[in-house]
Length: 282
Image (cartoon, rainbow, N blue to C red; front, side, top):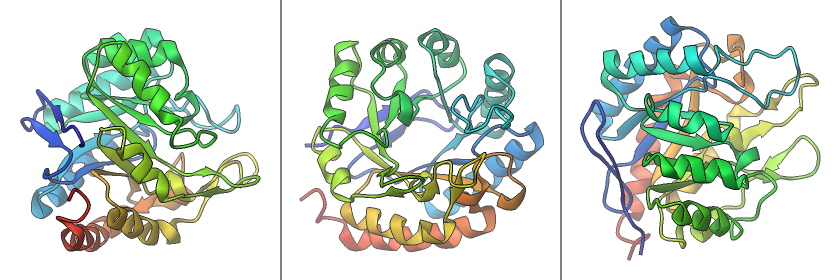
């Protein structure tokens, strides 16, 4: 039995995530590069989601604390970045999600965000999980590249122990040798068995960590195939990083989906979802 998670209040009204609910789409640039770019992507994604009947949440990191190189672009930082996200939330009228990296950021971020996201590298950090849970916000935990799907039950128990049932779990690939990831589609079913909605991160799953020397590479040509496969297995949400011109993105360009490719891919994925409807949750 999969518990549904309700995201509320949001600028677009309550959003139900889980079996029988519209697909959740978390999409946006890897990091906040500028207000203009964030507004452009958020408005376009909101329009696409409205046309296709999916629930949209804008995503962007206010700080990428785990960049490969010391000189890599990290974003505007917590205070400025959260203000930008809060303003976008109100002006564009979409809920927002972003990463937190330290327990002290949880309460501050909860004033601006609809979903608090725990980065993959930090999915075992007990104090961070507990701080996020105590805010009362929905918490999305990305499965670490180094963590088995069944071990994610420990993260679930930490969140529940801190007082929340508003839990999402996200698959984003597992380490496969050096500078490579592979997706074990069994993990989607395993994590869903814990009773909470599961999200597939189709863009970080094709990342090549550290594969470009001082930054991560990626193989965006595999995004559609993996996303279709995940949809057929059964997921409640999709996470994708999008950019109008990935070649010029300041972070994760090689594994970002071009903005103009989003709607055609989503139409494919929704067709797959419709085809397996009634089977996944039977």
